[in-house]
Length: 231
Image 1 (cartoon, one colour):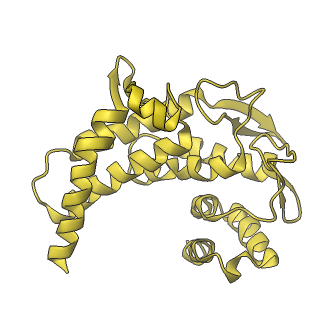
Image 2: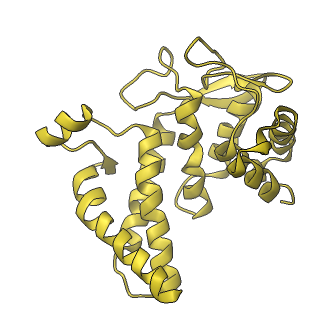
Image 3: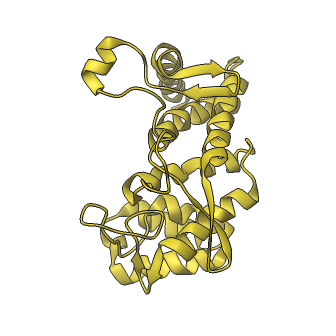
């Protein structure tokens, strides 16, 4: 089993070295930033350019963080651990430095957009993408920069902006919904994982999952509720 695990780590390292870092990570005066590659072939395939959206950043840097953690557990002498953690830290700092503080029901919350180039006041992030945006929690858990206050403001966004009443959550992070970004009956596992930091948030999210029966066939949601229950 150990040999198999090392094989997975080796192949993940290959992906990091040949694709994720050289294609998406740029060193700037403000730190490491994730941008879509400038390659015409990439643009022809994906049609995207400029900064990587927040949810996709979490997908990419989440892989780097887990890889760094695996190297540390294996104590295999890999020299990329600090580098990958710095990329994660800088991405988290970029996210929070551009999130717009807003007030709702006497609490400081956040508004943000799908990608840093959009204006959150007019183009708020939708829930489908925000689900993964909030995995910036992993940077907090790894002590890579995000503060407890910043995490609470994300939680406040769900509790005091997106929550519309009993088991109703807005389709966008600014508390609005529309035909495409419709209301939800519950929040899913990425948000629930943050509830270990706020018991009232846990009660809100777990109650909605229970009432909506989301746990019937959504195993990540069920696991998140059970994992956060005894914190």
